[in-house]
Each structure stands twice: as structure tokens, then as C-alpha cells.
Image (cartoon, rainbow, N blue to C red; front, side, top):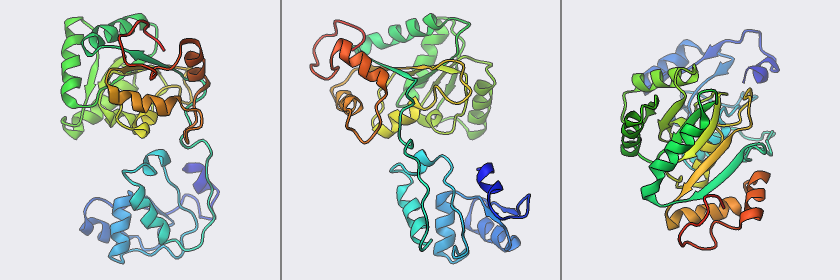
Length: 285
């Protein structure tokens, strides 16, 4: 975002307006900064301001979508489309890598019974060793995060937990502690799949398989980021029949989402994970 701003014809530093929460706060902020060069906003707040004619976009010269992969997923897409319709004619600058998986990140899918997942996770964490990078463990709900936390406590594994039932201030503190490297294991829900920017994560474990392809991509995106010392690995536990449908999409090379060559290598050696749903004979497909 900084480099985009530097490339625009503003006086530098530019005059920045950032509407706060609530319609009254937004209205007061826009009135107090009518000549702002740069407006920083969430899609929802900006859409409300447009509907109430608090702001007009006729003079807009550049629209930047920070965390574009999140803003263009189904959660925010309608709001972004509403914003774009208010822009009139414009030139688009797009990225072919928006929904691409990083080519250097290895992905492994483990067919496993639900009753065996905890012991497999413990082994993965222990195999990392104290000199390895951090581990992110994704669960689909807060109760699983808490339950896994108790198991790691029993095995004397230091860790952090992050889930949506925690107060916002507590979540912010956990984010900071993990980013500083003060703890190497974070058990979390999808809260950590969007917005957690750290380069020291070496292993992502999908303890619960994500429900959508977008969620899978966001989780995978936490590893192998710019500044990382190692390529990183993603290990996903495949337990339910409905998980297999999503694995098929990840396996399909002509999917609209780019497939990592490491997935192709694993698949060609061991076959499709989705060909059958019987007892597991090997850990990796």
C-alpha cells in the first residue's frame, strides 16, 4: 500500500482520513477531513457512507484492496462489487497469483480416523523439535481449540490458543506473543488464517479439514511467507467423506486454483486420496 501511495501525485506525506466505527463517527470524520488525499476504510463502512451520500467517488484515481484474497472471497465480494459500481470507468490492475498456492510449500494429506488425530498431532509437534519453526494448528470451532489445548497441557507442550469466544484484547495479545516468537505452537480457528502475518511458521496442520477451498487457501497462506527461512509444510487430516470432495478440488489440475507441484509429486507416487474411503493403510497419499 505504501508504494502505491508513493506513486500517486499527492503531496507527501498525504493527508489521510480514516473513518471510525459507527455512522456518527464516520460522518464526523468525513466532515472534519473533507480534503483528505487518502481514505482508509472497511468495505462495509464505505458502502454505508456511499448509500447515505456522505462520500462521493467521482474524483477517485486509485482503489487499493489490501488483503485482496480475503476481500474477494464470498464474505466480502458483494460489498466490493457495490463499491466498484460507483467508480464509473476504470482501468484494472490484476494479479494472476491472487488465488495461487505458493509453489515451494509442500502439502500432505493424511487419511486418519478421528480417534487417532490427537496422537498424530502430538507426534507432528514433537518431530518439529525446539530448533524448528512455529506450528499453526487449525480447528473448525472453539471447543476443539480448547480441548486440544488441554491435551497439549497434559503432555507439557507450551502453546497458545486463539478462538473467537475470547475478548478482542486477549486475542490481540495472543497474536502479538505468537508473532514475537515467544510461543512456537498456536492452536486456533480461522481467525488466524486471515491477518496473521508472520514469517516464522514452518508447519500448518489442518486438524479439522476446512469446509471451503477459500478457507484452505487462507490457512495454507500462513506458511512460506516472505522472509521465511524454510519453504514450509501443510499437513491436513482427512477424516470425513465430505472432506474428500474438497480434496478432489485441490487434486484437480484444471481447477481455477493453481495446484502446487509438490501435491502432484505426492499424488503420482501414492495415488489419489479420494479414490476410496476404506481403511487407511499408509499415512500419506
